[in-house]
Amino acid sequence: MPKSSVTNDYDALHEGFRWHVPERMNIADLCCARWARDADRTAIVFDAGDGSVERFGYSEIDRDARRLANALAALGVQRGDRVAIVLPQRPETAVAYFAIMRLGAIAMPLSILFGPDALQYRLSDSETVAAIVDSAWLGNLREARTDALRHVVVVDGADPSELAAGELRWAELLAGASDEQQAVDTLARDPAVLIYTSGTTGPPKGALIPHSAIIGNLPGFVASQNWFPQDDDVFWSPADWAWTGGLMDALLPTLYFGKPIVAGAGRFGAERAYELLERHRVTNTFLFPTALKMMMKHEPEPRRRHRLALRAMMSAGESVGGTLFDWCREALGFTVNEMYGQTEANYIVGNSALRWPAKPGSIGRPYPGHRIAVVDDEGRELPAGELGEIVVNRLDRHGHPDPVFFLGYWRNDAATQAKLIGDWWRTGDQATVDRDGYLWYGGRADDMFKAAGYRIGPSEIENCLVQHRAVANAAVVPKPDAERGAVVKAYVVLAPGHQAGDALVAQLQEHVRGKLAPYEYPKEIEFIDELPMTTTGKVQRRVLRLREAERAARIGAGAAAGGENNRDAR
Image (tube, rainbow, N blue to C red; front, side, top):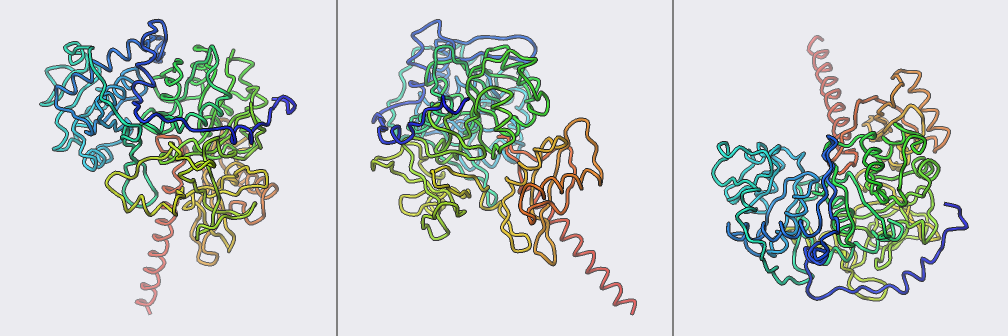
């Protein structure tokens, strides 16, 4: 976008912004029921990946949500009960959310990628009473089933003769239920969703999200999607609807505005992404930097092959970096709006190229309604340019409560209180803020490390590596070193057509050395087929750090054993 066409009314937007949160509200009403009177309004476009496409209206989603709510109530599900959802992107997923919320119960989304152990921990900790599962993942749920889990509703493909006690077929359950159902009267601060977040240490914690959080997410969603909605807007994102990114940054805000969202079945791939964008004339999207890297490497000039309708894109989860920023602007024709948030306080910082200038590499500025600072370990606000922790205030600049906040960790008040400094919420993420108020992401506090006395943030090095034509993706971690404490090590996924070897290692090291500080170049590079990723598309640096620590421990143990053998020989 030409610089002259960008309006900069950031300060005016903030000053004029006021929260309007009703005392009583329910996400199922705001995101579905109120649009159901329009029989022609499409809610979900389901692309099965085999060429078939089905459209589901708000009226259909609302009708089935009422039926499912009645069916769950007949099974004994009550207000406040936890109901698990183990479903991919499909219409039934939205139906399940809204049915559970209509009952005043709490929806607990669980990724279809979770194995039995991960499922069992969450089901047990939350004392979930019912679950809704795609038949393809029923086996894992059966292995994870707890005593509290009384009923399992199976979507698609389940043979009645093979169902166990307490397992019911979705289609039959809805067919026998009435579509006349009165939603429970819920307060804005009543719990709606329980999402388990995985920290780098300790067991996962359940973050309890209120109905009001959808309101708290809207300023960031509207701004990052360049003032969504417009008349012909269609949304798509590969982000799993079981996670905050897919649920609160894609599914619910799109439906809140009564627009269609594309549900794409199957695993993400660059060619599949371009296919969905083109076929459904998608105008707005949320793509993780990892996905963007794959698309950029697969099709450097996408508009030569594809007729795209994209007008806005948000990206989050990892730093976008200058390379992707420039590619989006030059190859796609618009500026990508980077965003930052967490499950506990989502959609709080970001860009909106339509209303204020974006800086390449910056995660943006606080969205209207949110108050952000960067502080040191004692909670003191830091001056521009100094690295510290991002914190979010529970009150906006006008002193009004910010509805974006979660209610607290499930049955773990001590963990909640440990993250608070008065009215400030500690995110655990590092950043600097410049003199213009833009934040520059420095990585998770626990991803930072020291090498030879220098403090290293992996994101900058990773983004530099990806600029090289041979690199599809990269992750940087510390490798334990007896003399220097640690050295910088990079795990690199090669782009198609490139071969690993000592010559390429030297090229990549020189590439980084020439662009960053001398102490930041990777002393060691290991080529890997794929990086360990979370289900939300973030690189799991923790897995790689543990790998390096275990290797160092084995080497140390071997050296010690060798020393003992030498002494014995003497």
